[in-house]
Length: 311
Image (cartoon, rainbow, N blue to C red):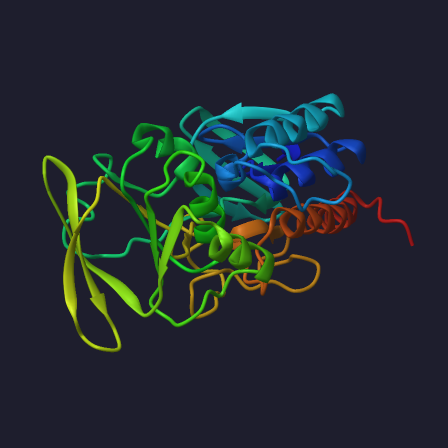
């Protein structure tokens, strides 16, 4: 059986698109399958300002468009479809999608992660009606409104800073006594007069009438509970890796896939990059670097199958 492609990349986040560019430049037949717009969670970044070589802040949307265009320029093919099944038979992988089946000699998984839910009363009921997980997507709907931001990591601080451009009534809560975000991001929030920070505070309930109207907050040190009026709740408390296509691969306690330094899983020819992978640091530049490494190693795997490995 002959494969349709040399390399299939599932997911077009920064890791997947970097992999696509390197694969196409290596003269591989590359297919990128993405169910939504290329960019992944990078699309939610309002100002990407820490990517080497880009001195001026750039929106995640524009950055993602540039990555897609660059990969296509080298010959990578993009397909908008949902991947529903991945199996391997011998040396051949078969990917079943909403737009047909495709085969390849290697697969790079870049399906990323989706926002983790807080699992409090009212969260699901008011999702899309004041509860959101994307400030750049939904923030403009709440200009000059009272907004609660939940979380203490990089994403929470970055999104809170973005929302402060839309409203001066931002309250940010974190369950611990300090942020776990990078110091530069945390300092920016602490110095922002439009953001009121409450540490040692958790969200217990979201209330309203059709849409968000108020929240119940609890101080974890005193146990004091207070209801505050809010128009929106933005939740940024981490991510859940999207591993449904590879449920049998080894993962860490958080469900993120474990690989070696070559981005290889325990299945020969299957590689994992980006937010799906177990890593101590999740950033756009990290994902892009992993994509390059994965494609380099996938190329060696493909050459081995074809009997073309350079020794």
